Length: 370
Length: 263
Ligand SMILES: Cc1cc2nc3c(=O)[nH]c(=O)nc-3n(C[C@H](O)[C@H](O)[C@H](O)COP(=O)(O)OP(=O)(O)OC[C@H]3O[C@@H](n4cnc5c(N)ncnc54)[C@H](O)[C@@H]3O)c2cc1C
Image (tube, rainbow over all chains, first blue to last red; front, side, top):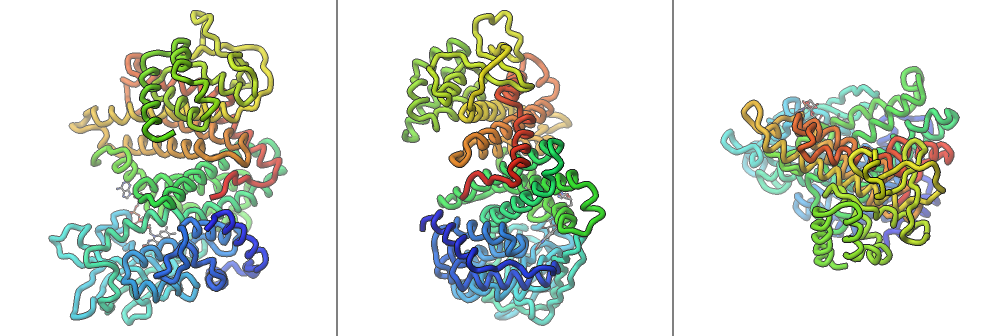
């Protein structure tokens, strides 16, 4: 598969098949409906299936094709980066850890937009210190029974399934061998989803409660104790293919900003230049990462560098917007406000800025323990 | 060139640069085949030679050759190179005693210069800055592991760790911009890469100096060579600040943001 040809075919197809979101409705419900619509169309036309293995309903080909599809879909504003990124976070996990039958059955549902899934990792007592999580799963015959609470679970209110981390080991099992992952149906009795309000008004995340929730054993992802490794294996995907579409989104917003502030003249130059340098640096780094992944290299802690660059470039872009369009974010109800506020979370989700620096210090600079 | 020969070449270059500098290094590099490297494999030779200049802290006038290569002028000339603030400098070994440039680079101010295209030269100085940044990071990292305060190595303190992590992020980011194939727009690609490298080097200088404490402020420790070198190199062919501003002006004129390269 020639990558350049793939890209130009995709672009031609998107030019012919207008999937622009209907104007006017910026609610989360509207985002969700648009997400499903776009995925359905792209799946039916095959685009959404490239770069995924045939065993899970894909059409094969290199992973870099996924990044290219993401870039076009999100860069053109057809889908929001948040919902779209869930594909890249959760699908590789299913392919690597679910039984082949389960992956073959479920993955096409996610990629075609007929289902949404969520990631139930964080808990009220366990954020950065994920390994301390306390949601328990206990074996009872052929099933496991889950009790506990998750929080900040994005899109759980739309989700049909949840990739859930639980504790299965006893007090003597070391944390990293005590965690087990399950693929849980959200409509199982005992699951309660409660949306939380966010500061930017797009209420994407929820609390999810588990009260004697019975999960069949064949919904375990991997083996008992594999949950920590699953969480670690997911991160490099979250910070590679997944980033490329987010970067495309930031560039599209930067285009818009440049358009808005052109009349400012030279006074805008260093602001714009600084934001450009940060985005360009991020894009170059991420491009190298995509190519390393494409060459079959295993990504690891080095992707923490990509995450630091992304979070800082994103916040810098919106800080620049606020500096160059004084009053707009505070006084006018526009998309800039929502996006500015959302960018404040970039140094929190997916591992905080501090946690990334801890990883870089420990794993890349080999500075030993704190 | 196969990886093995490249490694041998790198070793030879490093060894040479560690033992000589200035005009002598120019002669030694000529002996090692610099002219052929530049004409036959500049894509490899420029990053390699300039990164090593940075890592070893030595210097040579090879930048002139890179400038002349792009300008398609005769080798051996001494072109006036733009310097921050709208000035010009030339490489001049002649009056070493009158040289007032910080950190020992034989640069002398001149009154005027012509307009040169500088994509390769900017990339070259970018690699030089990255090499010097890596040298500073290596010094600071080792010091953090060796220096004991409050009963433990200072590498155990999160404030120290985060400064070094921040330095690595900046260097890796700059290297990525330098490694981007610039086919679409070589001038803008190189301008951004030089800006990223200058910025990364100033970040590295600040953090590494802080981590080294008092010893990093002495003329006995190696750090100051690199700090001074990157201050000078940041200004050479346009400072990070100036280039960034120029890139911003370009965006305004164009009304959109060049992506520069696809996946
Ligand atoms: C918009 C958004 C969406 C999210 N979506 C999901 C989702 O879908 N699924 C999911 O499972 N989670 C999700 N999260 C949760 C996210 O992963 C956590 O918020 C994150 O891991 C941080 O945990 P915390 O909020 O508990 O903060 P804490 O871990 O309590 O951190 C608070 C502060 O302390 C600092 N800190 C903590 N430990 C250290 C340390 N060792 N060294 C230095 N500083 C430290 C942190 O950097 C931070 O600044 C989402 C979060 C946000 C904001």
